[in-house]
Length: 237
Image (cartoon, rainbow, N blue to C red):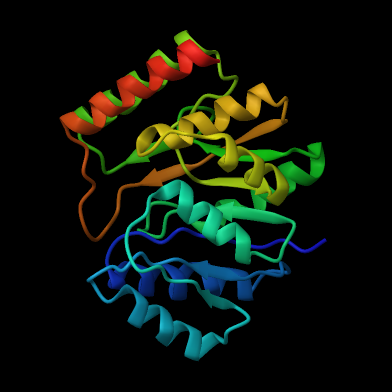
């Protein structure tokens, strides 16, 4: 069975070069897994596409698949765009800003194979999972968001706002087509909809390390957006 990796790449071109070449590609080249890396760039002004083209020249078009778009169209449509070009039965979604490390991928795959799961998600809030590099405010907001979600929605997983996940391709396609949220709420709705459709979900504890390069932005508008999304899901699920 053919498994693929499909990372969504955010941040500067330097992030992409370091993450893809030094961690993801090196990891998969040393593993037994068949893979492809699909890079979606939404017209980034930071040289992302140029660096991606350099990676493709080094590793080949069968390993580095470039599917750029003209402008920023949102996370959900980026998923749809990527899924359309993925050839494997499984898709792994991960940030490429040095926050998610590929060393956890074998655990994702092993758990999926053992329990025949539809989704495996990384968790920062169970087992030996954790967050490193965040200040107290960021940790408080993340913990608070997950706590409120647990109380209101009973999702059955410990970490709803993370994005490091493995999906069966057909499951991911159905979830994306049924999700309406944007921004931070999108990842949460994916899990809530999965519960509605009775998909099986497993968790793997991960260490989330805040990006080495660039800055994470979390302000009042994102918090308001999250609150609205949470109330919407509470009212409709």
